[in-house]
Length: 65
Image 1 (tube, helix red, strand yellow):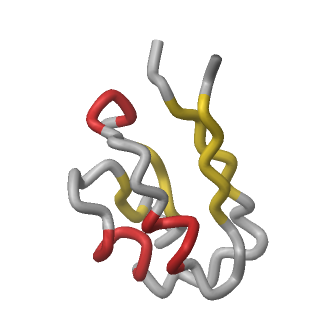
Image 2: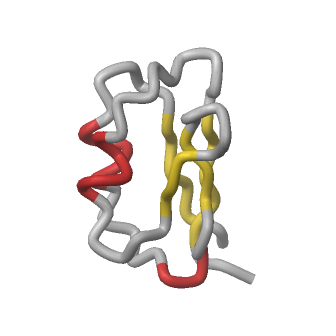
């Protein structure tokens, strides 16, 4: 089980790709509709750059306990 959980609001995602570009571990990608998806969740370091950089607050990263 991953240390982190992503909550992605696809309605708020405007497909800017900022989260994908800032992810240092390539955890995120854009799906066939150009909406953000999680690919390699086990590689996530929890830096939260995706959440911090999202201009639409469409991504939230939570720590699993």
